[in-house]
Length: 412
Image 1: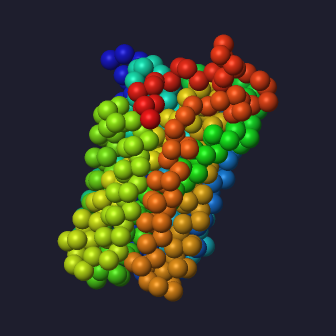
Image 2: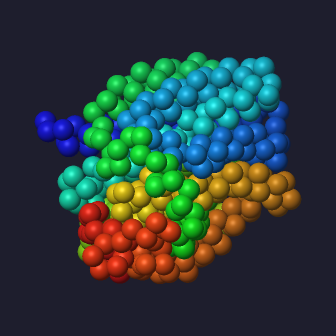
Image 3: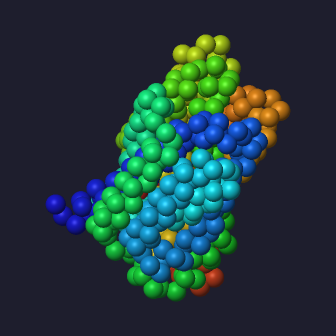
């Protein structure tokens, strides 16, 4: 197996392990809520601590990844995630403060891990000379499906939350750092000045637009992760195990959409595909909320997951077109996108207190509509001279040096 193939497999495993750990936590949220006696607003504020840790890490991750490289950052971040997950799992037996602390540490690990593995994904794409980012994100989705199904089994078997999540933490801390050793070196050499790939990307209009596009899709995805189980149990009166299966249906649809993404994007172009998926997500969310019977709600969860499938990976690839500035731009786009995880849980929780969690999810349909409107202006073109940082670096045509990334998804 060549170094590129080994790195591709290792990156896929990093995405998959992240999804497994993520879904394992959220599959047990109803039990954690019950142990802590939280209402929807209290649960949303508790989840906010993890989002805060993620956003902090995302803001700082551009310079950190540029300095230390994606390999080392993924290794350290996976261990941080595992420590936070185990702390939150055992903290639920004690009270809210240790859960908040554990989720914050977990969030820090998640944010840095996410940027670093996405950066490695763009490195692998360049070496393969073809687009595979959505399939790497399909790896994340495969992990979430496995995590959700295992979570449903753990709920049905009445396995304690602490035992289940600690086992997942040990798996993450041992498997991910080992596979990350196979990562390829990043294009920017570790130790390069942080300003080159760091905070200057915040001044680039196209990068900000891509970030807003990702924000809409990420909030729609995050709302599904956070609230589908709760909305199914409380709103549709489903049994807890059935509620977790609704979550699995949502994640399965995302996995299928991401695996088929490269073919769809190459054949039809990214703008038409992303617009169609946004409309699909809007319809699916509305069906999930207003379905008169549980099978229709499950169908709505499937359409919701399909609609949310490609927004994040396509946004990451668009941000990383220039390998020399990829770390900073991916960090900016991921930071803006992950603001959804910061704002989404408390806002939907507060809204759920007023109109029920199920009805509050109609806000997701509005987000899908916003994403459909924003798709053309964020993804319809390439970076221009107005997007070049103040150092004035350009290619021979006077535009940002963004010619090395695969172009398979650039048809509009």
